[in-house]
Image (tube, rainbow, N blue to C red; front, side):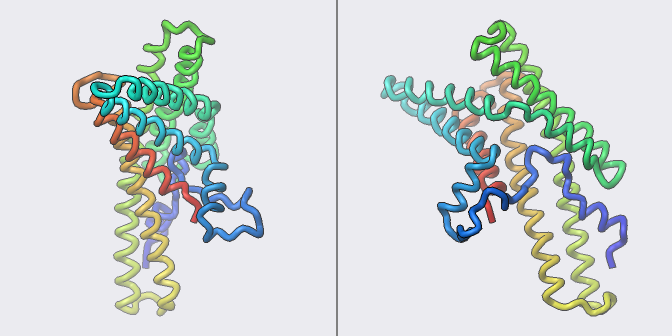
Length: 266
């Protein structure tokens, strides 16, 4: 049998992971609509703020790659792609208005089941709150509401907080993946050895399915966080590798598509 402490750790679904927590929408879905229908799923997906953000993020980084590819041969197309990229980036900042409160609320409502997770939650969500708060100021500077001269400083602080948050989110997800593997192994051992009070195969399969589903979602979150970390590092410490258009474009699309996967209605 799994110990109560192990179950508690595994059951905790990291509300500290406010940026990438998967929450299927049921509200807003027409009662008569079949969720097997792709159009219905798309409508629900786009009704979520994270859903529209991932769509526009896809536009942003596809247009970045188009600009890089067309710059030398088709300057007119490249210029239009650049304008699309900039407009998409500003739009995403507007969509994220007030988003820094998500991390604060995650800490307030569910900081973690254990001391180690509470510590991870503080660092991860603190980094995320800094990221989103200064990203709001960056947006206001870019559109001219605040002094445009502060944009570079706001961008650096925002990216630094973002990077800190990503590091601790990644650590927490790897811990939860490891806990899931341990829980899966013990569940299988208890079932096959008969140490458990003979749970039904259906019940065991359902538990294993949930563990597997949680693992996939966390791997998607890790992929997205690593990709976004590359983008943030390009802002903090510009270098030829991270700042190359192909690196940024692919990283942005990996992050966006991982977000599509996690937020797509089941």
